[in-house]
Image (cartoon, rainbow, N blue to C red):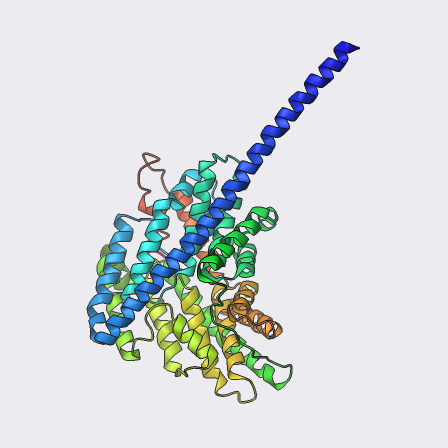
Length: 468
């Protein structure tokens, strides 16, 4: 009897020791996850600060002499392309297609290269350089890949072997990047669910939710609880005002769908002699694109340069009225910036173009508050470009701190999405991610794991690298 009791006590003690070890390991893992999310928030704020400083310096240069951009923009784009191809191969694009692709790659040696800290550093550096040079790009898309890279690096430090856990960290990093970049925690979660992830387990990840919250709180602690476009009190009452929903949804859907179709087609290579020139002289082509951007900037008085955030905010708050030429020239400038192949994103330029469309439509709808029409135009074009209507609605709602127009935003967003699908049947990010995966799967493995990846392993197609 005593022997049996002794054996039971020994088994019980062993069980307690094993439980203690498991609990300790779980808590260690959680603390590392939390630390990674905080780091994402810190880096996102630092990235935003650097981008704003670059934009401010560019503005001072333009005010000093607008014509100086005819030299700075071509030189900046050429330098960015050269650095991307020489030192930061894999940093091209905004990183959203790459992040989506890594969630479906089984070869984690490729994932490690695409989400390395070196690539994250290059993404920040080259996007900031592009903004200084006057390219029509944004920092929010790049922050997605940067956030994913940071979380992935912490996962490697923990020696995680489970594929689901590693992908969950990548998803959490991307969502945390959106949350910290826009100060839209709910938008980050919805973006991860609607755009980045295609698995129920990843969608309900507690790691993702915790990461979004911690990175968002970190950003708020550093820069305050700001709203991207300030606070608006506009409403869209059901009735004649809903003509704006139809107008913005249709026009935003057509223009956004056409924009996505152009970018998807361009990612496969430009046609004819121009395509050959891009393949043979990518740096010279980037300089030529920079010259076009500089000419557009000089012609528009500098409003086509950069993210377009200031212009969008002024249109939404009613401080300034911009003519139709603003969103037309911004539209062209963003396409040219994309074709140049430099790193940078589309989120902020898309919001600016959408605000310009809404501001132009508002003058024909006297029965609707102009600020409300601008918000509807913003959500319509943004939804049409990314073809993620819930994400577009939540982000615009959180950025304007206005829940009163939620129903109208949803209706406009889904209408624009439907129209966009008729113009461009593929989602922009998904289409580029699929091309990226196809190239990666057929690319030969590198001679050494530590060597730089071959061009085919990171550049989707013979044209300039895609940038979204």
